[in-house]
Length: 70
Image 1 (cartoon, rainbow, N blue to C red):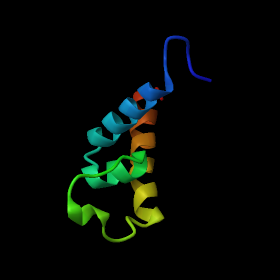
Image 2 (image 1 turned 90 degrees about the horizontal axis):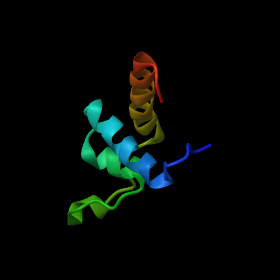
Image 3 (image 1 turned 45 degrees about the vertical axis):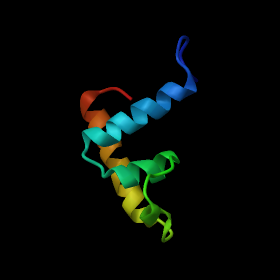
């Protein structure tokens, strides 16, 4: 449930900020968040494997558990 005064778009900002805080590369942040990346070369290939993406997601979960908030 989304708290009063919050919008789902706020989640996208927080998600990106939390990934930056664990020094996640911007192209992985873009792939996880569904953002388009700049540059022609970014359109080639199929992206990162799920194991790599999951590793970065686990880092932000651990970071949040250490701070005692989500």
